Length: 115
Image (cartoon, rainbow, N blue to C red; front, side, top):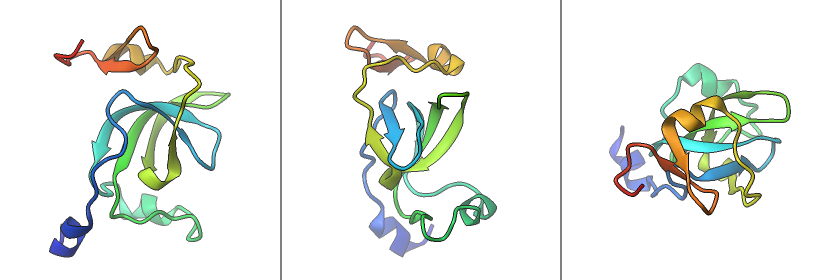
């Protein structure tokens, strides 16, 4: 990582267990990992159309994601995420393995001392 990139890094807006939705596409998910800056392959990044390609110098989130048809793992830039306030549970099967759901409908990592 270059010094310039380090100086432009931001603090992640979302936290582990938070339910978020994509701002352009119809899917949502639970954050299970966060990269402070882009940390995927160049091929993956270039596969995104140039007009919607996110900047690399922002947090990227790993999500246990779902849409109306299926469940999958997604990798999404912070600029493309919004909080999901629906309160609906996320049906991805790995959510139950990694998180417990609290009384308010949020998710807490199973290994968290905050449970």
